[in-house]
Length: 238
Figure 1 (cartoon, rainbow, N blue to C red):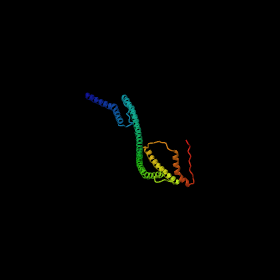
Figure 2 (spheres, rainbow, N blue to C red; figure 1 turned 45 degrees about the vertical axis):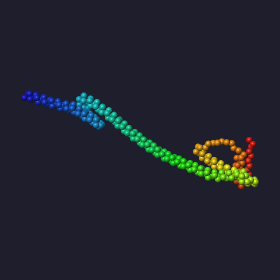
Figure 3 (cartoon, rainbow, N blue to C red; figure 1 turned 60 degrees about the vertical axis):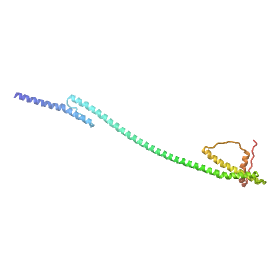
Figure 4 (cartoon, one colour; figure 1 turned 180 degrees about the vertical axis):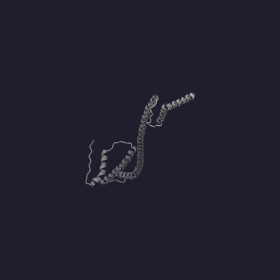
């Protein structure tokens, strides 16, 4: 009986020891493990209890301090991430606006270039039309002018007979001078077209100033006479 009681006492002591260890050591350790899982899963504010043996309490306090630091770092990372996302969003909107402005500028320049191209084509057509007109005018006007100039020169030279009337001779001279002047005007117009095309070669040469002035006065005298104006000129000897 003594041995039986001694065995039962030993079992009871062992059971009490296991219960004590389970309550004092295993329980806090399990709660510490649960708190660690909460921290791992991102649950904030969950702390391990600091009761129990001194060693487990110190371990729980160290864990709680670490959890506080981890949560602080996590909050800072979240704030940094949100700030970066906001900056990326603003930058994206800015780039989208810049791309839109660039697209509009490209379209505007394409429109301007198209208008310039059409304007150049129209100018080239106008230049060709003007050249054709000047060529036709040169042919259509020069032929009768040359005939008038040649005929007046022949009459003045007496080929068709002498011109005895001084007034008639003066009129023939005016006709010849006017024809020469009109021919010179046509040549000047053609020269202007050559200047615009960059194909004019200058040929400087001396002129007879008195003769040029006389021709100019002869062309202006009829209109001046109608208005009662008498034209005269005087040139210095030098």
